[in-house]
Image (tube, rainbow, N blue to C red; front, side):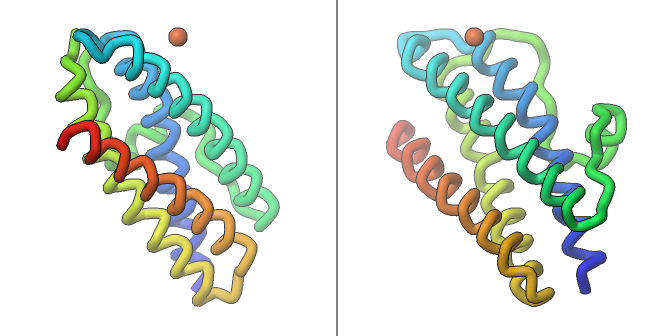
Length: 146
Ligand SMILES: [Fe+2]
């Protein structure tokens, strides 16, 4: 039962590793009147993502697993798509980010459920914490677009 949990945690880690650079891409390439607000928000998000990557990798190690720690493998696994190096509007930034956050929400929810089923309350708590943050972020992104 834990094998599927560990596989999902590593997939989630790969997605966050790709997201980390993608958030920088948006932070650098965003254009428009919301530049100052979103530029700062994106920096906050990639800092948060860096912390999550470290926590998930170290949780995997604590469970005797091998976290994905190279970009080639991460890219081959990840469902999150990279974007080109090109300007992007504030609206498209938030729409794209919202789609990725929906993905993060599905993954963290599934991992928390799998951890619960495996009797691993600590991992479930960890991922429920991320889920809470992502649900709040989704609400904020939806509010921006409303
Ligand atoms: Fe910066």
